[in-house]
Image (cartoon, rainbow, N blue to C red):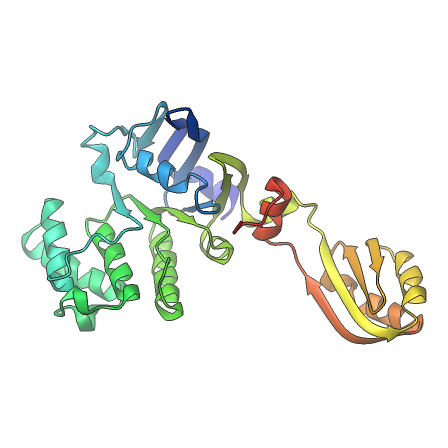
Length: 320
């Protein structure tokens, strides 16, 4: 998404200075972010980072000790009614009735949202198609796989066409096929103009889905931006690993003189280079290493990712 496009879109969620404490322990500290229509915003961090607590405050399930939340211009608090109409919440824990069919679950929750008649009938059919359960609509959900239950959980959150969809770790514990189906559904929602707040500890999900990402750890946002903006925090450098035999020492010395190479670390059977624009430098690096007497057996480019950013910001791996 371009900056200009984001400016033109209406703000759907605005969270400012959120704080949550339990006794002497601060679990969320001064968290602020905004989401606009058609944008998927990710909260990326390990388990226990504060993601679910933030979502619980946004959804009005628990009060913030400090700060403010507005959804579609309405102030959110545990007692708010008007603000609740604008969002759909998909919690980590499944919120479905196992003895009801998929269709019955959707109709039940639709009625709780004030829907009924032909509107509810048509919308139920639309949602079943979107989540890939139209052919299983008449089955009791206790017979569903974990992935199917997760998809139905998302469908319930979508039923009343919310302005904001809140997804809390929606792919935890599902098989790869269901996981991909869930991710594809979320991608469609953003293209249709819905704002999505998405929490995950899976780096690849954040990179695939999110226009902007907040990296969160120990209750604080450590950095925020697009994927490329966050990667720039690490210096935006690539790593090239060369493996082989021959005159590794001479190859290392020659590579240090190559423009664009920032650092060269040599071992007995390989060289690790730190460079800008690894793909562009790959050919001259291979040529120079060979000319200096190194016989290459393997070459790998490692580009920075959100895992690298998290390690750079916090000093620990994302899944620690």
